[in-house]
Structures are given as structure tokens and as C-alpha cells.
Length: 158
Image 1 (cartoon, one colour):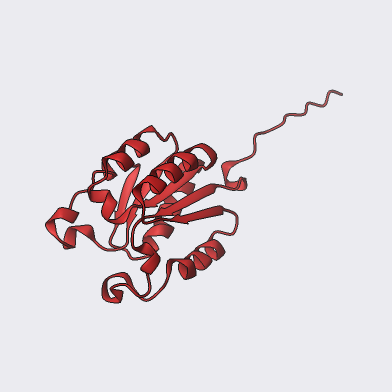
Image 2 (spheres, rainbow, N blue to C red; image 1 turned 135 degrees about the vertical axis):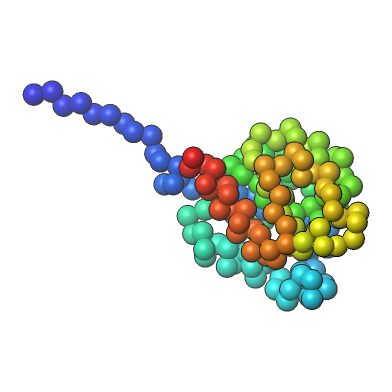
């Protein structure tokens, strides 16, 4: 009798996905800044819920109001994470530096906007960063982050 042992690769669904969430300027004020548009929850409170929803995944979170810090963190996350969720806030509409950094990151980047950017001022209707992201989610409130996580998980499984 011959016994053959085959070592199968671990399925992606069994592997922890490392996701870095990067928030840009003024998102540290969530919960108090324009609650009619952005809601009453802080991002930190929402992140607790997101971690409970996806207990198998590993989340890293960074918020900065400085463009250079966002560029550095984005590039570092592209090396040691499986996916990136980026809400560059106002920099989404203006930052060639962030756009170029996203373009060189080999891991998928999903751009998220809490508000519907198409229902706001004209200058917000387009993002310079969105064109180099895997996709853009806009207008679903904080739930947009969960949609981005689900996309990253589906992409890694498929």
C-alpha cells in the first residue's frame, strides 16, 4: 500500500488579512465635526465595531492631518499589509503626492469617503487619488469602511 501525502496551501479564508486603514485631515474630529454630515461616532468607536465584525482580520489604523505623513504611512503599508483602506479626505481632491504613492503601492488600495462627494461642492466631485485605487466607495457613512474590508476579503479569496 502506498500512502501519498499532499500538503495543500492554506485557503485565503483561513489566513488573517492585514488591513491598514489610513485617515486624512480632520477625520480625527469625527463625532463632533459636522455631525449632520459625518454622524456622531468617532472613528475609534467605529473601529471597535469593525474589529468585532471581522475578528479574523488584523487592522492597523493611522490618522494624520499631514500629507507627508500620509505618503510615508501609505508606502510602508504597501509593504507589510495585504490591503489598504484610504480616506485621504480633502487631500483626495488635490494631492498629486498621494496619487503617485498609491500608484507605486502593489497592494490594493480602496478609497473611502464618508459623505457622498458627488452631492457636495463641485471641487469634491472628482478625486485625483481615485483613478489609481482599486475602487472608490462614497456616501455610505462609516459603513463604507466595512464595504471596503469586504471587497478586500473577496478579492483575496478570488
